[in-house]
Length: 391
Ligand code: 13P
Image (cartoon, rainbow, N blue to C red; front, side, top):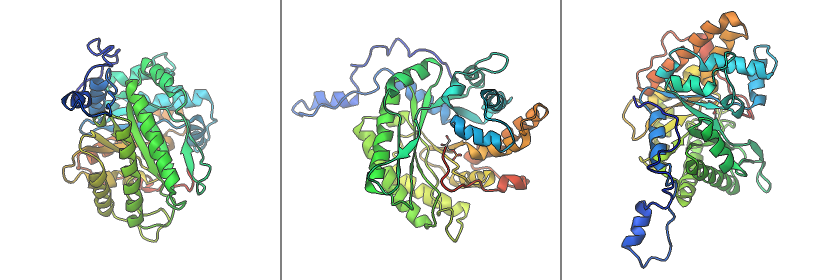
Protein backbone atom coordinates (compact mmCIF):
# COMPACT_ATOMS: atom_id res chain seq x y z
CA UNK A 1 0.00 0.00 0.00
CA UNK A 2 1.42 3.41 -0.92
CA UNK A 3 1.90 5.61 2.10
CA UNK A 4 0.72 9.16 2.48
CA UNK A 5 3.10 12.04 3.05
CA UNK A 6 1.68 15.44 3.77
CA UNK A 7 4.29 17.86 2.51
CA UNK A 8 4.54 20.83 0.21
CA UNK A 9 4.55 19.94 -3.49
CA UNK A 10 7.99 18.72 -4.46
CA UNK A 11 10.43 21.36 -5.65
CA UNK A 12 10.79 19.36 -8.85
CA UNK A 13 7.38 20.70 -9.80
CA UNK A 14 7.41 24.03 -7.97
CA UNK A 15 6.94 26.87 -10.37
CA UNK A 16 6.48 24.41 -13.22
CA UNK A 17 3.20 25.98 -14.30
CA UNK A 18 4.57 26.70 -17.75
CA UNK A 19 5.79 23.13 -18.21
CA UNK A 20 4.64 21.52 -21.45
CA UNK A 21 2.13 18.76 -21.13
CA UNK A 22 0.53 16.66 -23.86
CA UNK A 23 -1.84 19.44 -24.90
CA UNK A 24 0.92 21.99 -25.43
CA UNK A 25 3.04 19.43 -27.20
CA UNK A 26 0.18 19.06 -29.67
CA UNK A 27 0.36 22.77 -30.36
CA UNK A 28 4.04 22.45 -31.22
CA UNK A 29 3.32 19.60 -33.62
CA UNK A 30 0.53 21.47 -35.39
CA UNK A 31 1.65 25.09 -35.26
CA UNK A 32 -1.00 26.28 -37.70
CA UNK A 33 -3.77 25.63 -35.17
CA UNK A 34 -5.04 28.94 -33.86
CA UNK A 35 -6.66 27.79 -30.60
CA UNK A 36 -4.08 27.31 -27.85
CA UNK A 37 -4.93 24.58 -25.38
CA UNK A 38 -4.14 25.79 -21.86
CA UNK A 39 -1.82 23.85 -19.59
CA UNK A 40 -3.50 23.00 -16.35
CA UNK A 41 -2.61 21.91 -12.84
CA UNK A 42 1.06 21.87 -13.87
CA UNK A 43 2.57 21.96 -10.42
CA UNK A 44 0.37 19.38 -8.73
CA UNK A 45 -0.47 16.85 -11.43
CA UNK A 46 1.75 13.99 -10.22
CA UNK A 47 0.72 14.51 -6.64
CA UNK A 48 -3.00 14.56 -7.54
CA UNK A 49 -2.66 11.28 -9.39
CA UNK A 50 -0.82 9.74 -6.45
CA UNK A 51 -3.40 10.98 -3.91
CA UNK A 52 -6.28 9.64 -6.00
CA UNK A 53 -4.55 6.27 -6.21
CA UNK A 54 -4.12 6.07 -2.44
CA UNK A 55 -7.78 6.87 -1.85
CA UNK A 56 -8.76 4.29 -4.49
CA UNK A 57 -6.64 1.53 -2.98
CA UNK A 58 -7.96 -2.06 -2.94
CA UNK A 59 -10.31 -2.99 -0.12
CA UNK A 60 -10.63 0.59 1.11
CA UNK A 61 -13.09 3.46 0.77
CA UNK A 62 -14.08 6.79 2.25
CA UNK A 63 -15.65 7.61 5.61
CA UNK A 64 -17.79 10.70 4.99
CA UNK A 65 -18.23 12.77 8.16
CA UNK A 66 -18.45 16.15 6.50
CA UNK A 67 -21.97 16.99 7.59
CA UNK A 68 -22.45 20.68 8.27
CA UNK A 69 -22.91 21.72 11.89
CA UNK A 70 -26.67 21.78 11.33
CA UNK A 71 -26.74 18.22 9.95
CA UNK A 72 -24.33 16.96 12.60
CA UNK A 73 -26.79 18.48 15.07
CA UNK A 74 -29.52 16.22 13.67
CA UNK A 75 -27.29 13.17 14.17
CA UNK A 76 -26.57 14.21 17.76
CA UNK A 77 -30.22 15.02 18.40
CA UNK A 78 -31.17 11.47 17.37
CA UNK A 79 -29.31 10.25 20.49
CA UNK A 80 -30.40 13.09 22.76
CA UNK A 81 -27.24 15.24 22.61
CA UNK A 82 -27.11 19.01 22.17
CA UNK A 83 -25.46 20.40 19.07
CA UNK A 84 -22.42 21.95 20.78
CA UNK A 85 -18.86 22.12 19.52
CA UNK A 86 -17.79 19.85 22.39
CA UNK A 87 -20.31 17.17 21.41
CA UNK A 88 -19.38 17.38 17.72
CA UNK A 89 -15.71 17.04 18.69
CA UNK A 90 -16.51 14.03 20.93
CA UNK A 91 -18.39 12.30 18.12
CA UNK A 92 -15.71 12.94 15.53
CA UNK A 93 -12.98 11.92 17.96
CA UNK A 94 -14.76 8.60 18.48
CA UNK A 95 -14.84 8.02 14.73
CA UNK A 96 -11.37 9.24 13.77
CA UNK A 97 -9.46 7.53 16.57
CA UNK A 98 -10.96 4.09 15.94
CA UNK A 99 -8.03 1.65 16.17
CA UNK A 100 -7.47 -0.26 12.92
CA UNK A 101 -9.66 2.06 10.82
CA UNK A 102 -6.95 2.55 8.17
CA UNK A 103 -7.21 -1.07 7.09
CA UNK A 104 -10.61 -0.38 5.54
CA UNK A 105 -10.74 3.40 5.19
CA UNK A 106 -8.49 5.29 2.78
CA UNK A 107 -9.93 8.80 3.09
CA UNK A 108 -12.11 10.79 5.47
CA UNK A 109 -14.15 13.80 4.35
CA UNK A 110 -14.21 16.42 7.07
CA UNK A 111 -16.22 19.56 7.68
CA UNK A 112 -14.09 22.71 8.05
CA UNK A 113 -14.51 22.71 11.84
CA UNK A 114 -13.06 19.18 12.09
CA UNK A 115 -10.12 19.93 9.78
CA UNK A 116 -8.91 22.54 12.27
CA UNK A 117 -9.93 20.59 15.38
CA UNK A 118 -7.92 18.33 17.71
CA UNK A 119 -8.74 15.50 20.10
CA UNK A 120 -9.32 16.33 23.75
CA UNK A 121 -5.64 15.34 24.25
CA UNK A 122 -4.55 17.98 21.76
CA UNK A 123 -3.69 15.77 18.78
CA UNK A 124 -4.85 17.23 15.48
CA UNK A 125 -7.52 15.11 13.80
CA UNK A 126 -5.51 15.42 10.59
CA UNK A 127 -2.56 13.73 12.35
CA UNK A 128 -4.82 10.97 13.71
CA UNK A 129 -5.78 10.22 10.09
CA UNK A 130 -2.28 10.39 8.60
CA UNK A 131 -1.02 8.00 11.32
CA UNK A 132 -3.44 5.42 9.89
CA UNK A 133 -2.58 6.19 6.25
CA UNK A 134 -6.00 7.80 5.78
CA UNK A 135 -6.05 10.84 3.49
CA UNK A 136 -7.81 13.89 5.00
CA UNK A 137 -10.42 15.50 2.76
CA UNK A 138 -12.58 18.60 3.09
CA UNK A 139 -16.09 19.56 2.05
CA UNK A 140 -15.68 22.84 0.18
CA UNK A 141 -19.15 23.61 -1.17
CA UNK A 142 -21.32 26.11 0.68
CA UNK A 143 -24.60 24.29 0.29
CA UNK A 144 -27.68 24.45 -1.87
CA UNK A 145 -29.94 27.42 -2.56
CA UNK A 146 -32.96 27.84 -4.87
CA UNK A 147 -32.08 28.17 -8.56
CA UNK A 148 -34.03 31.11 -10.02
CA UNK A 149 -35.76 30.35 -13.30
CA UNK A 150 -35.86 26.61 -12.66
CA UNK A 151 -38.59 24.18 -11.72
CA UNK A 152 -38.15 24.53 -7.94
CA UNK A 153 -34.60 23.19 -8.23
CA UNK A 154 -31.40 24.21 -6.52
CA UNK A 155 -27.82 25.14 -7.26
CA UNK A 156 -24.70 24.76 -5.19
CA UNK A 157 -22.78 27.78 -3.88
CA UNK A 158 -19.11 28.07 -3.01
CA UNK A 159 -17.01 29.13 -6.01
CA UNK A 160 -16.30 32.65 -4.68
CA UNK A 161 -13.02 32.59 -2.77
CA UNK A 162 -12.64 28.84 -3.38
CA UNK A 163 -9.05 29.11 -4.64
CA UNK A 164 -7.78 30.81 -1.49
CA UNK A 165 -9.82 28.56 0.80
CA UNK A 166 -8.46 25.49 -1.00
CA UNK A 167 -4.87 26.71 -0.62
CA UNK A 168 -5.48 27.12 3.13
CA UNK A 169 -7.07 23.66 3.41
CA UNK A 170 -4.04 22.18 1.66
CA UNK A 171 -1.73 23.86 4.19
CA UNK A 172 -3.85 22.40 6.97
CA UNK A 173 -3.33 18.89 5.55
CA UNK A 174 -6.32 18.27 3.28
CA UNK A 175 -5.45 16.45 0.07
CA UNK A 176 -8.86 15.98 -1.50
CA UNK A 177 -12.08 17.97 -1.66
CA UNK A 178 -15.77 17.30 -2.02
CA UNK A 179 -18.52 19.32 -3.67
CA UNK A 180 -22.04 17.94 -3.53
CA UNK A 181 -24.72 19.29 -5.76
CA UNK A 182 -28.08 17.62 -6.36
CA UNK A 183 -30.40 16.84 -9.24
CA UNK A 184 -34.05 16.13 -8.56
CA UNK A 185 -35.91 13.79 -10.92
CA UNK A 186 -39.48 14.76 -9.84
CA UNK A 187 -38.59 18.43 -10.49
CA UNK A 188 -37.66 17.69 -14.08
CA UNK A 189 -34.73 17.92 -13.99
CA UNK A 190 -34.64 21.07 -16.10
CA UNK A 191 -31.87 21.57 -18.66
CA UNK A 192 -30.88 24.67 -16.70
CA UNK A 193 -30.45 22.78 -13.40
CA UNK A 194 -28.37 20.03 -15.05
CA UNK A 195 -26.14 22.53 -16.81
CA UNK A 196 -25.64 24.58 -13.67
CA UNK A 197 -24.81 21.46 -11.63
CA UNK A 198 -22.31 20.23 -14.25
CA UNK A 199 -20.67 23.62 -14.78
CA UNK A 200 -20.33 24.27 -11.03
CA UNK A 201 -18.74 20.85 -10.49
CA UNK A 202 -16.29 21.41 -13.33
CA UNK A 203 -15.23 24.88 -12.12
CA UNK A 204 -14.77 23.51 -8.60
CA UNK A 205 -12.77 20.55 -9.91
CA UNK A 206 -10.40 22.80 -11.86
CA UNK A 207 -9.87 25.13 -8.89
CA UNK A 208 -9.26 22.18 -6.55
CA UNK A 209 -6.67 20.66 -8.86
CA UNK A 210 -4.86 23.99 -9.16
CA UNK A 211 -4.52 23.97 -5.38
CA UNK A 212 -3.39 20.37 -4.91
CA UNK A 213 -6.74 18.90 -3.86
CA UNK A 214 -8.20 15.89 -5.68
CA UNK A 215 -11.80 16.87 -6.41
CA UNK A 216 -14.57 14.43 -5.61
CA UNK A 217 -17.22 15.14 -8.22
CA UNK A 218 -20.67 14.52 -6.74
CA UNK A 219 -23.84 15.28 -8.65
CA UNK A 220 -26.22 13.42 -6.36
CA UNK A 221 -29.34 12.30 -8.17
CA UNK A 222 -31.80 12.28 -5.31
CA UNK A 223 -33.76 9.14 -4.44
CA UNK A 224 -36.93 11.23 -4.01
CA UNK A 225 -39.75 10.30 -6.36
CA UNK A 226 -41.80 7.37 -7.65
CA UNK A 227 -40.00 7.00 -10.99
CA UNK A 228 -38.70 3.74 -12.43
CA UNK A 229 -35.07 2.63 -12.56
CA UNK A 230 -35.10 3.25 -16.34
CA UNK A 231 -35.95 6.89 -15.73
CA UNK A 232 -33.06 7.18 -13.24
CA UNK A 233 -30.72 5.67 -15.82
CA UNK A 234 -31.85 8.18 -18.42
CA UNK A 235 -31.31 11.14 -16.09
CA UNK A 236 -27.98 9.82 -14.78
CA UNK A 237 -26.67 9.41 -18.32
CA UNK A 238 -27.69 12.96 -19.17
CA UNK A 239 -26.13 14.40 -16.03
CA UNK A 240 -22.81 12.53 -16.30
CA UNK A 241 -22.52 13.34 -20.01
CA UNK A 242 -22.76 17.00 -19.17
CA UNK A 243 -20.44 16.75 -16.19
CA UNK A 244 -17.71 15.16 -18.32
CA UNK A 245 -18.27 17.66 -21.12
CA UNK A 246 -17.58 20.57 -18.77
CA UNK A 247 -14.78 18.78 -16.91
CA UNK A 248 -13.02 18.45 -20.26
CA UNK A 249 -13.79 22.07 -21.18
CA UNK A 250 -12.14 23.14 -17.93
CA UNK A 251 -9.07 20.99 -18.66
CA UNK A 252 -9.52 18.91 -15.55
CA UNK A 253 -7.02 16.03 -15.33
CA UNK A 254 -9.20 12.92 -15.24
CA UNK A 255 -6.51 10.80 -13.58
CA UNK A 256 -6.64 13.19 -10.63
CA UNK A 257 -10.36 13.16 -9.81
CA UNK A 258 -12.71 10.80 -7.98
CA UNK A 259 -16.44 10.46 -8.59
CA UNK A 260 -19.18 10.17 -6.03
CA UNK A 261 -22.30 9.06 -7.91
CA UNK A 262 -25.63 7.86 -6.62
CA UNK A 263 -26.39 4.29 -7.55
CA UNK A 264 -28.97 3.88 -10.31
CA UNK A 265 -32.09 2.72 -8.43
CA UNK A 266 -35.84 3.26 -8.74
CA UNK A 267 -37.20 6.33 -6.89
CA UNK A 268 -37.73 5.74 -3.16
CA UNK A 269 -41.52 5.79 -3.66
CA UNK A 270 -41.57 3.53 -6.71
CA UNK A 271 -43.91 0.53 -6.37
CA UNK A 272 -41.15 -2.04 -6.77
CA UNK A 273 -37.75 -2.31 -5.17
CA UNK A 274 -34.80 -3.43 -7.28
CA UNK A 275 -32.43 -6.24 -6.30
CA UNK A 276 -28.69 -5.55 -5.77
CA UNK A 277 -28.03 -7.39 -9.06
CA UNK A 278 -30.39 -5.10 -11.00
CA UNK A 279 -28.97 -1.98 -9.34
CA UNK A 280 -25.44 -3.15 -10.17
CA UNK A 281 -26.40 -3.88 -13.77
CA UNK A 282 -28.00 -0.46 -14.33
CA UNK A 283 -25.33 1.47 -12.44
CA UNK A 284 -22.44 -0.18 -14.25
CA UNK A 285 -24.19 0.26 -17.59
CA UNK A 286 -24.44 3.99 -16.91
CA UNK A 287 -20.83 4.26 -15.71
CA UNK A 288 -19.44 2.24 -18.63
CA UNK A 289 -21.29 4.50 -21.06
CA UNK A 290 -20.19 7.74 -19.46
CA UNK A 291 -16.99 7.47 -17.39
CA UNK A 292 -13.57 7.21 -19.08
CA UNK A 293 -11.27 4.51 -17.69
CA UNK A 294 -8.70 7.24 -16.90
CA UNK A 295 -10.78 8.07 -13.80
CA UNK A 296 -9.22 6.07 -10.94
CA UNK A 297 -12.12 5.68 -8.52
CA UNK A 298 -15.89 5.64 -8.19
CA UNK A 299 -16.82 6.19 -4.55
CA UNK A 300 -20.58 5.81 -4.13
CA UNK A 301 -22.78 7.73 -1.73
CA UNK A 302 -25.40 5.80 0.24
CA UNK A 303 -28.22 8.32 -0.24
CA UNK A 304 -30.60 6.93 2.41
CA UNK A 305 -30.17 3.22 1.70
CA UNK A 306 -29.86 1.01 4.78
CA UNK A 307 -26.35 0.09 5.86
CA UNK A 308 -26.74 -3.50 4.61
CA UNK A 309 -28.42 -2.45 1.34
CA UNK A 310 -25.58 -0.05 0.52
CA UNK A 311 -23.04 -2.81 1.19
CA UNK A 312 -24.94 -5.44 -0.80
CA UNK A 313 -25.26 -3.11 -3.80
CA UNK A 314 -21.55 -2.31 -3.73
CA UNK A 315 -20.73 -6.00 -3.48
CA UNK A 316 -22.91 -6.75 -6.51
CA UNK A 317 -20.98 -4.16 -8.51
CA UNK A 318 -17.70 -5.83 -7.72
CA UNK A 319 -18.59 -9.33 -8.92
CA UNK A 320 -16.55 -8.83 -12.07
CA UNK A 321 -13.63 -6.52 -12.86
CA UNK A 322 -14.37 -2.84 -13.58
CA UNK A 323 -12.16 -0.27 -15.33
CA UNK A 324 -12.12 1.80 -12.13
CA UNK A 325 -11.86 1.10 -8.39
CA UNK A 326 -15.53 0.81 -7.36
CA UNK A 327 -15.94 1.63 -3.70
CA UNK A 328 -17.82 3.60 -1.04
CA UNK A 329 -17.91 7.10 0.38
CA UNK A 330 -20.76 6.61 2.81
CA UNK A 331 -21.96 8.90 5.55
CA UNK A 332 -25.30 7.56 6.78
CA UNK A 333 -24.49 3.94 5.85
CA UNK A 334 -21.33 4.03 7.99
CA UNK A 335 -22.54 6.12 10.89
CA UNK A 336 -25.98 4.86 11.79
CA UNK A 337 -25.04 1.83 13.92
CA UNK A 338 -22.20 3.78 15.50
CA UNK A 339 -24.52 6.52 16.75
CA UNK A 340 -27.06 4.04 18.05
CA UNK A 341 -24.35 2.13 19.92
CA UNK A 342 -22.63 5.20 21.32
CA UNK A 343 -25.74 7.03 22.63
CA UNK A 344 -23.40 9.81 23.76
CA UNK A 345 -22.04 7.77 26.69
CA UNK A 346 -18.28 7.52 27.36
CA UNK A 347 -18.63 3.88 28.46
CA UNK A 348 -20.00 3.01 24.98
CA UNK A 349 -17.13 4.51 22.96
CA UNK A 350 -15.27 1.23 22.51
CA UNK A 351 -18.41 -0.63 21.41
CA UNK A 352 -19.28 2.21 19.01
CA UNK A 353 -15.80 2.06 17.47
CA UNK A 354 -16.26 -1.68 17.03
CA UNK A 355 -19.58 -0.99 15.29
CA UNK A 356 -17.77 1.37 12.92
CA UNK A 357 -15.18 -1.30 12.17
CA UNK A 358 -17.93 -3.84 11.45
CA UNK A 359 -19.43 -1.56 8.79
CA UNK A 360 -16.06 -0.45 7.42
CA UNK A 361 -14.93 -4.07 7.10
CA UNK A 362 -18.21 -5.13 5.48
CA UNK A 363 -17.78 -2.41 2.85
CA UNK A 364 -14.14 -3.31 2.40
CA UNK A 365 -15.24 -6.87 1.63
CA UNK A 366 -17.87 -5.50 -0.76
CA UNK A 367 -15.20 -3.46 -2.53
CA UNK A 368 -13.42 -6.75 -3.11
CA UNK A 369 -16.68 -8.47 -4.10
CA UNK A 370 -16.52 -10.87 -1.13
CA UNK A 371 -19.25 -9.66 1.22
CA UNK A 372 -22.01 -11.81 2.65
CA UNK A 373 -24.89 -10.30 4.64
CA UNK A 374 -25.12 -13.38 6.84
CA UNK A 375 -25.26 -12.49 10.52
CA UNK A 376 -25.89 -8.77 9.93
CA UNK A 377 -27.93 -7.11 12.69
CA UNK A 378 -31.59 -6.36 11.87
CA UNK A 379 -31.01 -2.71 12.76
CA UNK A 380 -28.44 -2.35 9.97
CA UNK A 381 -31.18 -3.28 7.50
CA UNK A 382 -33.36 -0.26 8.31
CA UNK A 383 -33.55 2.27 5.47
CA UNK A 384 -32.58 5.86 6.23
CA UNK A 385 -34.28 7.63 3.35
CA UNK A 386 -35.84 10.98 4.25
CA UNK A 387 -37.80 13.03 1.77
CA UNK A 388 -36.06 16.31 0.93
CA UNK A 389 -32.97 15.39 3.00
CA UNK A 390 -30.46 18.22 3.30
CA UNK A 391 -26.83 17.55 4.01
P1 13P B 1 -24.67 9.62 2.33
O1 13P B 1 -23.82 8.38 2.23
O2 13P B 1 -25.29 9.78 3.68
O3 13P B 1 -25.64 9.75 1.22
O4 13P B 1 -23.64 10.85 2.22
C1 13P B 1 -23.57 11.66 1.12
C2 13P B 1 -22.42 12.57 1.17
O5 13P B 1 -22.25 13.33 0.23
C3 13P B 1 -21.49 12.56 2.28
O6 13P B 1 -20.27 13.20 1.98
